[in-house]
Amino acid sequence: MPLRTTSPELESGEIRVASQTEALESVVAPVAHYGMLSRLRSYLIFDPLIWMYTVVLGLLSIPVSLFGDTERILHNFARAWSWMIMKTIFSPVKVTGIEKIDTTKPHVYAVNHASALDIPILYVNLPFQFRIAFKKELLSYPIVGWHLKRSGQMCVDQQNPAGSIGSIRSALKSLKAGTPLVIYPEGGRTPDGQIKPFLPGAFFLAIKAHVDIVPVALVGTYELLPMNTYHIKCRPLEMRAGEPISTAGLTGHDMQALSARVQKAVEDLYESGSAATDSSTSVPV
Image: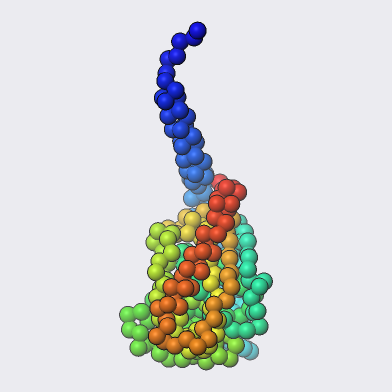
């Protein structure tokens, strides 16, 4: 009869530890692919090209937009700029749900915000002209600020809300006239990849204009380019649109409840299919 050198309990414990280690390695392993070559590619190729697109198209758009519908022309420039960026960074976007939305009607699109590259993704994949809400601080950036101001976007002064009244009125007029509005209800980019609490005031215009809100989840953009870095980590992305949420019969007193409902919808979209996405994602070097 052979001698046992370990107990069954110890063997089972070793098996559990080994399986947990393998599972951990399967999660951590993809991160190791973003090494020095990935950084060099981003710093020496991607980032300079994006800056070049911004400068060239931004300056070119100024004289061109003087001849014709300024807002439409500048939107087309923004879409071309976004298309060039997305083709450059090799990060394909899978779009789901948008085909179920009646895009002939104006909606407010509530989107989670994790990356500076969220904007190009939206411009490329939303098949209509829209306005976007942005923070006043962006006006201080040359070219980008000029474009935002001249293209009719909605400027939000978070430090002085009263200073945003004119811009909000203009956005409300555009929304009622049929131009959709894109908002980031978190009020800024997430610093850790988690969806931040939505600001109830972000839904004032949807209630005032009596338009539905479409929840939209951008998946993978935090991993692509989080805050405080220029290292773009190429990866597949997703844009998931949900069922429109009605604002019929709602008033300003309902903003808190509406905000919670929209946030829940965005979070559900963000989490849906995440396991399948993680297991099938291959990370480029």
